[in-house]
Length: 486
Ligand code: GLN
Image (cartoon, rainbow, N blue to C red; front, top):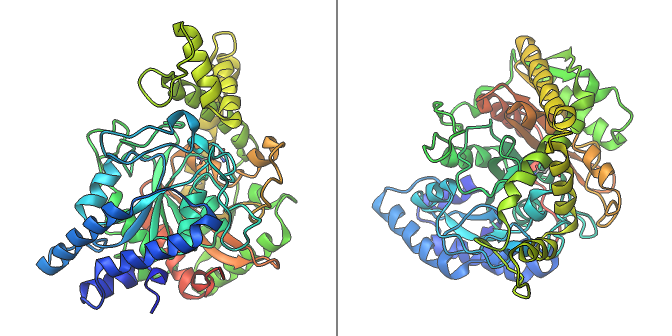
């Protein structure tokens, strides 16, 4: 048995039965990282030494009979979630030397459940992008086809899971950055409801949109990881005091009687690639045969979602990123003798092209003469989009679409055409604008053997319905069992 290939629930089962030991599992995963990651480029920092100590602690918890389902499970973490004593770079030059003095709440939670941390994984700089090519270090490649991107911005998370260089990962999703790379790498990705998971210790990109969530090999694993990280946190003022159900409990309930909406604005476009469309249509047939009912619905303001996101997200980013000025965090240009030139040079040298582009757009949209025309207008459009969803959820329990109009692209393909990449966020962005839970589950492959993901969106705090639908679909298919041949 190759231990690194296990899912979280398979490994937990063996660990709890004491058929394998946490250290063996960790060693198998680190061996895999050593042999593969030079090619894949998923990791920025590997934390093997600390992981061995964590594995010992997990073993103790298992022997004491106090172990959680995540005890001894090797997990990778997107490099924008703060980890005490471990570098957190956001894949940016400006934070290349930043070592947080505290853990994000999600990390604290995983530590208290005796998870084992494999390291910090690659991403688009400050989570801005959809290919992981905006990383200041190097692009991560797609384990299914190394000349293709794994998607982004959580590309390191998705590639590390797909290539079995960890058993699960935490990513972040501001406009699709968990779901799209999960889809492109043939794994499961969940963006929880805004407020479900604490953002304390998550380096902010766009605070009203960001959420942390799991990327895993199957739906059961996603439910387990979501159980582990969810819940109200007094340290995050946007965290919701909502009850957290056990997300594994209703997985087997089936989809009989569920009403699934098909937004006509999503499907009536010729922008969806043929292989993606046909995989989505087949998925609809499977869910129908399992007893789900499909209804056509309308989200009339869909056409404005991308535009509104690309005003709101850069505006919030321009404000959030003002703190990187060479004083408190990260690098400082030491050649400057004046304060202002030190700020200027530090930021010019520290930020990459896409980050600068967003800061410029955001600063412009927030400036006094343009605020009403851009930021305020975009916020008004956001309200219209929220209302579209409210109306849709009066008649259906969840919504279905592709995750992305196309599969993973070739690395470098769109590097000089950011607009093309922005437009490909069309199906994922609205869930962030409306704060809804949404997920990606594998639903097929293109003729070139690239994975395709199915997108499900639900009512606020109703992750359970998404997960049981995805689980039901997963039981009827084999896509999640396929692993890249690398
Ligand atoms: N692709 C989107 C962007 O570039 C989403 C990023 C994200 O979700 N972090 O902003």
